[in-house]
Image 1 (cartoon, protein in one colour):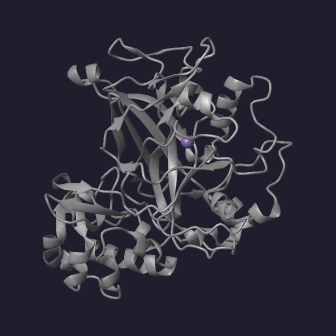
Image 2 (cartoon, rainbow, N blue to C red):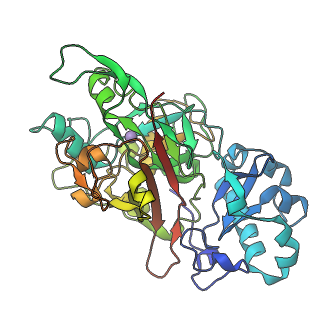
Image 3 (cartoon, rainbow, N blue to C red):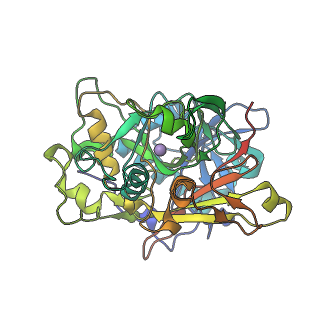
Length: 433
Ligand code: MN
């Protein structure tokens, strides 16, 4: 497996002439994530986040500031074309943008193409053809399984098959778009018959999203050693879930309306090249676990296929905002709690010949840590709704109430390198219609 290498764009000592990027918690010049933005009333266009600004890629290309990059491929209103780049082409673009933003001699010519981020609206980065959600967070799978099957939380397939289900692409929204409490069918154990109405057990899930880059032809699988070349980047994903609907509808075919009313993603695409310094070994499987089947096993992927990313979830209730309180942290976890790597879920998805396309999105599943301060959903934190959590405002929660806002953030960290962030993945719950 060939993966992006650490190069001059990762040097901790390098700064940008865009001063706000130096020391920026999310978007220093070592990050350079791709996204889609618009200015008031304007058309959606491609951009790169740098500190408190967004570089207008098309504008920079038209002004001949991106030599060696085919400008016509940067003119669209989504990243699908760019996502289809070979990794080498994406690397060239990264190097060119890095040079533009670090070399003082480009400052004057580039300034007109820098937009203040606060004056811009961010959009979905891609036209998402298909969305699949996996279940690779093993502690989440254990916790949720234990709620339903205390003696046998993990089903026998879990350690052989990266479990997933086909989600719904149409209802994915970028950070900032409110999520409406869904109506649906639920039947609590004490009830004789189901009811239809607003969800009473609305929850969030902390996940990473994996953007598919180059696709594969129908019928032609992706070898595990090539999977990295089909990944265009990563984002945060909140897989909003109505647990009451889910419990009633999930058998025998899995999640359906409990999950597809909305999913929220962070709008910036963190490239595999930006993440090169943050690759770590996939944690060894516990003693007695089976090795991955050969089609999912690659020595390089096992050595550097995991990512040193911490993920946080915070809540802010209407009362907390009224009282001027900061959001309250619900959990902090690490991407190393994934039982399968990003490459393994890509390869597994295509292993039957299913074709993946540029702009497809794969969710990892909820990434919980082993202890309660790292649980990535209220279902786990409240132990199935049995143990309310206390908030600084004096309020308690088992599940989400109208007016609650969930904010997900993530940071990639490694000794000797500048940390990079994912930006925000936030949405506020509004009442059911
Ligand atoms: Mn999920």
